[in-house]
Image (tube, rainbow, N blue to C red; front, side, top):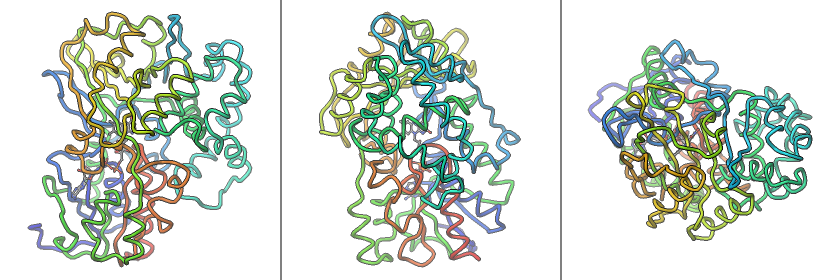
Length: 474
Ligand SMILES: Cc1cc2nc3c(=O)[nH]c(=O)nc-3n(C[C@H](O)[C@H](O)[C@H](O)COP(=O)(O)OP(=O)(O)OC[C@H]3O[C@@H](n4cnc5c(N)ncnc54)[C@H](O)[C@@H]3O)c2cc1C
């Protein structure tokens, strides 16, 4: 790799988890270097002019409740290194065909007022969990451990381990609250009838109330830039354009932390791993893919429900049944005629994203892993349904297929954005019961294929670095 010296630790991959691992190591006084395959740093947290000059788009992640909630990121001086969070007035809107919308507001009370007859039920469900979030966050955003606050976790677990369908039908009588819950739960990319899909809705709902769903001023690249700036201030090094094909080609070090998924781990280091562990990695399952679109727009999205313009994120799909059917389709290898679409509209709240008066929009829907089907029309139909006239505002569009995602970041295997399926079997014990360590001395995995899984929060990297410091770098 052209680097003559040796290091305490080497990190392969500069996604948020790779950078988090490197920071934790450097902060602990270890010398560390990061090798990144692509020319730009950041993996799933990058921004670029994907459409027209002057329009800044988030290539992957756009909205960041988990970054703000992350117990690890909270310990880092990211604001001093240039990161500024913008909180849209409302985290999320969920429009309906009648021109109204349910809105996840920062306030539980105000949210419940948009849910018709389920206002009281929503308060009953969300208030206790939101109140105990500070106790829940460390337990939920990390590997399974004996909790410091078992009662708070038990109260969460009783609800969270149910399927989204069963919890929504149990708590809510009306369509508005059920639909809002479905849109939150569908971030799991799992059929909403599966156990533990309620957990995704509860965590995202509670973070909406507790920390908000912010966007970084200037785009998600700014999260990466702040992490990189802090890492360098600690003496950490980063080399871009440097794809590691085998751990054998690395300079000497006492630990190697891989911000990659199991399939790549097998290629990079398979020969160093035990047969049994190799078999387990080979059995690791990837989930459905994202089909992503970005637009440069002549004006804001013309939502029929005015409340949608107050929200950073908008969930499209209407009723619970439609969203549930869309998620079942991608799990079965099919493509929903009316897909559940996640839309982010950061330029409404951040003027640095587009030229004056112009806007950007970001969206994706779920499709089967490695799908080659073109969802462009179906995604735009869904937006047009809730925002008539949308297509007339499009100046340029960029379509990224599952294969396109993987070309741009090898961790997005078949277009899976979470580093592996996040069903109950792979939620807590990922990629194997060994979590961050492997059967090879000094070799660790630190990507979102370890707990707590997908999202920009850095917790996987933080815990992997702690494991490395405990076992290899004492
Ligand atoms: C379309 C899309 C939308 C998303 N939206 C959100 C969102 O709104 N909010 C949110 O919190 N999360 C979102 N995510 C998820 C989030 O981006 C990921 O969960 C997160 O980036 C995972 O971080 P990571 O460090 O584990 O891996 P990644 O960010 O994937 O980084 C892995 C890095 O390793 C590098 N690499 C891989 N192999 C090698 C090799 N052999 N040698 C050297 N380098 C290598 C890659 O190039 C990459 O830079 C989204 C993801 C996608 C794709």
